[in-house]
Image 1 (cartoon, rainbow, N blue to C red):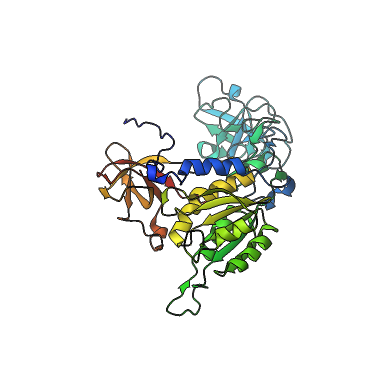
Image 2 (cartoon, helix red, strand yellow; image 1 turned 45 degrees about the horizontal axis):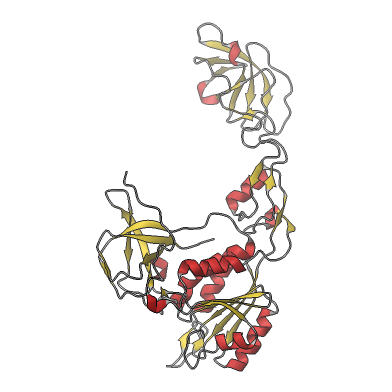
Length: 426
């Protein structure tokens, strides 16, 4: 087996050049987000059938042992293994029938058997279940040629969960598998964090609704449907989704209104240094506190984060691929902080490149990548684009995640070891 060194922060090298000192590294930006994003609101009790994608506010404990009684793991015949003395074959008289959900009518004694069905309680005196395919039955007598082992095909009481055992820890996201465990634990009601209230503000005078009328100087809106879908998948409450014009006074009013009703305001566009970039000046005019403004990555360098009163603000770039990439890296981390989620998230791992890479150094570059198999050493191989184009999203559906190209590398050979981060799907 080939051994690889652990990925050590900052693995991307995105703060590797003196000229980039005004920008923060990816890891520093994530650390600042973690320091400012605390779980919002008070815990609430919700029925289990309404808890999908919610985050547990307290652990779930088993109300009793599971299973709560010894039961049959399959259809067959319940017997006592001690009844099989001497050399076979053996004959046992069927004296009872035990369907699932019914109490046992009588105990077994000696060479007796009970017809039993999956999930039914094991009769007193029995300790094994023989699957029906291994039995020949004639009238009320079964004929067997193999001696059963004690405990064969029996689900023992408490073998899945002990009473009061912690089944799920605080901070777990309740997906279908977690909900199954809650139900088995008898947790019909769970205490969860409130949904994070998110407001979305997509700027740009040139932006028009996807598929709608547009003139030669206008573009269809990618960021609104893209981020709305991402937020819906994350299980947040979208309290507003508005289009912002490239006018400072309008953005001051819109940002103020949205901050008053949300825990998190996400904006796209207007955060660079051009004459038509008014989001950061509007944020400052409202008294916003900037935590970082600019990260040493490509694409997405202008991405910014701050606080406006009790409301957090995440400023994503306007180009769709930049917005998606920075959402994946910073937005999902921000939501984990606001929800208190501790479920494992996709983390960076090593992969190898399928071809050589040439690039302009200076910032950590994140490229769309697709997993295509394994090399002879068992390492995952990725295909990737020849360059990163911040406005192009046609290849997004084909990508599995992002590779991180170090800031100081102008070339990498085929088979180079790089970091890969899968997309967060929630």
